[in-house]
Image (cartoon, rainbow, N blue to C red):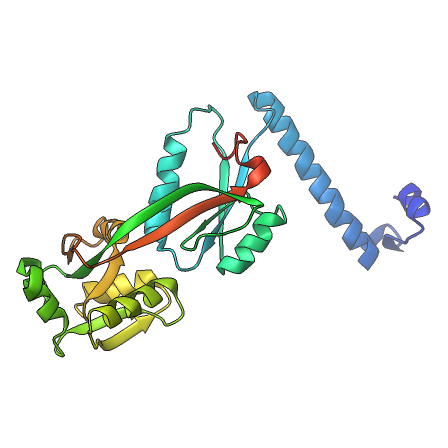
Length: 257
């Protein structure tokens, strides 16, 4: 310790006889030493297991994407990997613009978003269009909609008695829904709005109203809430998309495969 103190010209410990206490500089140095020790253990574990390149993948996700659907998607991708190395996947949530910034600054390996990115530095790894359906409680107030099709459905959607639960204004799915209402001349009676789509699904299960949701989101919800039902994709509805983005020069790397 004394040799290190001389080398960096800092006092690392306050000595009290046979006892000592770390100074603020000592606390900082100890933190770095702890990291060095942990890295040494990680290296030893990687070598002993035969994995010289233990993979760590950090994925950024926009807060607008429904979580159960996302977990299912990532899980399926990992199951399809041909590599024997099992990566450590970390997922974080932020706004689309912040995620794009972090991806370009190399603090993320990929971004899953419901907005396309027109940027020459980025590459689209996956682009998926998901049909939007009308979802509701299976045996609830609006279960009759399941039997309604064609013009009768258009008439039912215009009913002032129909209660709607919708994403919060400003979210992409809400903007798409508002455009649909405008095109179909529907004046929705909105009773519940939220920026968390899982909460929207819960509102459906409680028979609060009906919602327009991408089909995979509804199917993910059905895995845990079987009381959710929906119409088949209807002509006149739209597709909601999601994109998986990576840096252009690294899109072919092993971690992204």
